[in-house]
Image (cartoon, rainbow, N blue to C red):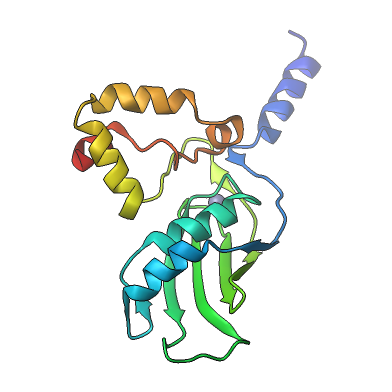
Length: 187
Ligand SMILES: [Zn+2]
């Protein structure tokens, strides 16, 4: 290898990124499921929902524009139940991506017509060696628990891994495929 070729390969190696990045639309506007809303409303204590199903609904919405981040919630507040004003916000929540280098955050509002509006900030940046998945809770956890009664967690993990789509695979996001350890715990 000549000196100049060697220098060139060193240069190429230097620009190979160790991070996964992706552009996405920073705004979202989708309908929110009314039956999930009603269930969560029943669980309201003060301004907080104890039923966590709303989180899955919000995340499903967020994932339509950004399927590669793994989201967690920081806080949420619902309007009070006897507040019947037809305009205004009935739920506000905010959160972030759990990948250590990623600075994506979001703020969501659900209006009285059950429209979910979300606004993101920041850019996707995941280390290529990092894998992350959302904490499995609520209905998703119950479903898995039922399934794993008759199924080996390791086997189920491998099956789910095969169905992880390419974006999620490259970005390290394993929301649709919790680890074997997590599946064992859920069982
Ligand atoms: Zn992210």
